Length: 227
Image (cartoon, rainbow, N blue to C red; front, side):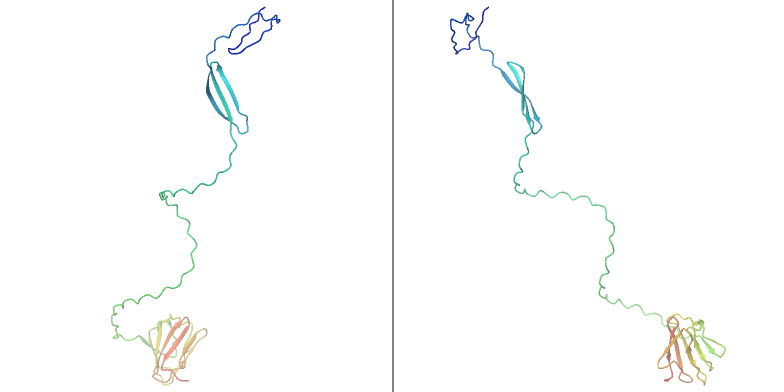
């Protein structure tokens, strides 16, 4: 049995003659080709995992594959300086109209406006037509149809203004006393009759007007008695 001992160039070995196993020492063989190692895949591993490296292929052409774990998140850096203001963006589309809000309180009254121009003068009234009239007697009463009429009172029968006389505000009845005995005029139930100084006709040939000023409320104006 023989044993071959390979020694690299530049190395030395001491062989003792008493070792019976060594019978010959050969010289170093020629240097092999240089190994070519290229980077293959580089994979990012999970945070906290171990780094790993594998070599694939056969010398002299081999590939180094690496697995590098994700590093821990670093501390937040200092806030940088504010950048310059960017250009103004385009105006967005108008949104939908919202619901109507509640009505606000009434504002103060504004100043009175300027007086308008005077209107044209109306046509002159016709005084040629006689005022409608009728004679007062003991058998008659005041009625709505008497509005605007002249009542010729030639009777001493008292005149009573009642709720059945439902004149509108502003309507009127004129009286002319022709009787030598002056009749009285008074308000019935639920009717108001006022006059100054009284609500009595003064004497024969006195004239007075009964004017409606509100519902069932009248004023007598004209030649009235002092008391």
